[in-house]
Image (cartoon, rainbow over all chains, first blue to last red; front, side, top):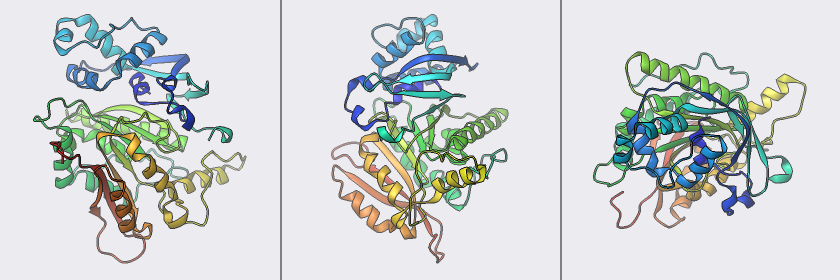
Length: 127
Length: 256
């Protein structure tokens, strides 16, 4: 699963939905793999307006990526900053989580990621 | 007609095999009327910001529908910067979908054609792991066959592989009372899951009582409405299928 997916997911436990601590899920002991993807600036420009930037900063830092700026870069800033564009390309489009855990910051439940597939099925006592 | 993605690599002993219902979804999503609807909603220059849409399919099975949307994103949405992701309760279906999308994207690339951006597949119970308000287009080919009971969502703990596979397949078709028990759970979560412009395409069969289902959605208020936008034809029999589109008409908004 691409790292960007974490921007669209939360804990599956119903009681966690109302807690801001359930988003984003925190990667733990994750193995990453990188796909080689051709530069696609339009994709980056058009996804940034819908990304929860604060959550992306958290995810990037927890996965050991270079620190993102406090505010999302504008299209003009990205056009002028090849390095930032390259870092976002790697983080958003190329990097996949292949193995590890995703932990909810609210209830502490850990979802297993195996062969790039996160498993959000809950044990009976959490449904 | 757009080409149907190949699923020849899928183990159909434990993953739902593409059938009439899957193909009705493909035909509907690539029909002139739905292309016009989706392009107006998600690729409209008159709307100031038009970020990349996110398409999520619940119950991807072999992946034939999601890979079709991903491969033909530019034709369906008028833009190829479309993000796609899948959820299935069956791990084997999620693995199959990843492979099906990979093959379909490669096929597009070989012909120097664009495709969308596939984020991945997850194992999950319907939309329970999705963040509120993120999904633009949700697609669901539910377990719609009326059955006396519903299978449990968690995999069966058994050493008998035939029994385990049968249980997984039953999750793809067994719909409980009126074949609506699983669909109703998904419908209940739709207003939270879909974004402001979000819409859903859900397959129903005649025994699901589609007219009642649509009436109930129209009673949600807040501009929610539902229409049949695809039909398997005027055959008799209980498996007559239709695709219902569910969306919100915001009063005073440019989006209809």
